[in-house]
Length: 244
Ligand code: FPP
Image 1: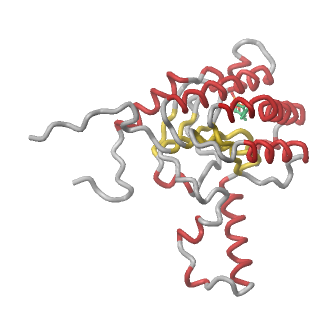
Image 2: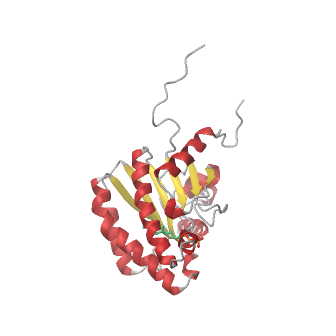
Image 3: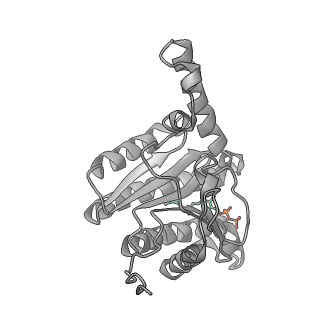
């Protein structure tokens, strides 16, 4: 009998982890605090989780920061979230760059303010050469919207005679998604005990392993990410095939 493969620290570490950060409001309510206090603490959890992802050797981390449906929240809360995102992009970029973190974005820029778009461009440009971890921030993002944008591009190319409709396949479609060069998430985590996708990465999560964690997002960090990765390591991924 051959001896088992030596276990390395990165054995079974997913290449791409995507997180639906949920529970900021409940974290604040449990303490009698305004919702914005939960979002602020949520931004601290973002810092801790990015650090943990680097330490654990995860190459891609996508965080759902603001959905295309979050505009339905009260104006004040939307403003608080946008201010927090701006603060994060202003304050953290130098640090992320120093730590080898490349920052990218997915979502519909249409509808985002000019100042936030400028900060997004600066973050992406400053960190373009960083290779330790790619942090993808989903901003004004919805999976259905992303699929519709891709379909529109394909229709435009076909109408212009640049694309033969009979050649459209999954690979051709995926090329029109927001970040075509990023591998699909191996592991999707949602915090706070809710068990929904909420329009997140609908195309890309076709074969992702799902982990629902009861932790409220502001309490999420290294230990919780490690726990999700341990669960991921126990899963058998078959991608529609069979194991034996
Ligand atoms: C869900 O909690 C969380 C959000 C809608 C926003 C996530 C934003 C952050 C973590 C802060 C800033 C982000 C970055 C990248 C710096 P909820 O308000 O729906 O919580 P609830 O379900 O308990 O009400």
